[in-house]
Amino acid sequence: MAQGHGWEGAVLRLFRGKDFTFTVVGAEDVTEHYRRLHLTDGGMLAATGVHPTMWVRLWFDNAGKPHQRAYTLVDPDPAAGTFGLEFALHEGCASDWARAAGPGDTIEATVQGTGFTQPDPAPSRVLAIADTASLPALNSLLDAVGPVPATIWFETSEGTEGLPFRVDPARHDLRAVPRRDHGAHLVDQVRAAVPELLKETADPYVWIACDTATTRSLSAYFRKELALPKHRVNALGYWRAA
Image (cartoon, rainbow, N blue to C red):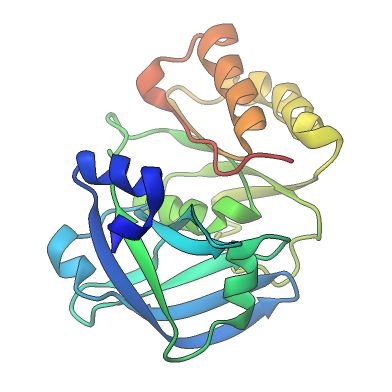
């Protein structure tokens, strides 16, 4: 498998990445720009176990060259060996594959680098900043922290109607933010609201999963300007803006 994945596959093998083949068993269009696939795991979940926000690297053909992108598992079921994947659709080989995928199609995957540590102590409030690419991971995070209240800034270009949020209005404050100025508008919205929220939050936990530049900017804001401890800020860039 990975021997056909170029230098990236070779690097992942050096770091003990495990390779699997997934098979599509069903597909549904959640919205015009968001598609969910149902897959069997090729033995992965029994071999690796499951944790919140768990992700895998999928391998796509990009004009004859291997291209990998990371996706979060949705509702993994180790006993059945199944899970879902959700794709925010845009231009690119990953979205093209997801649009066309149907029962019987297969995709190669590598598991390497994924992990999750429950915040300790438990947060008094979660501050989450996400977008359509990281929505499955956001949902998994909210499931993992259970009854903890959360303020969520969600950046989107198409609106949030129909997207599969797992939010409870009783404890989750979901704030939709239009994508403007390459993410700068989202950064401004977060910076404007956070100081007041922190006055009411004794032990926050911050989770950031946007495009790489936005994630880096917000991570620096929380860690350097607000001096939140490193272990209370989890930041991971999910994609690179063109």
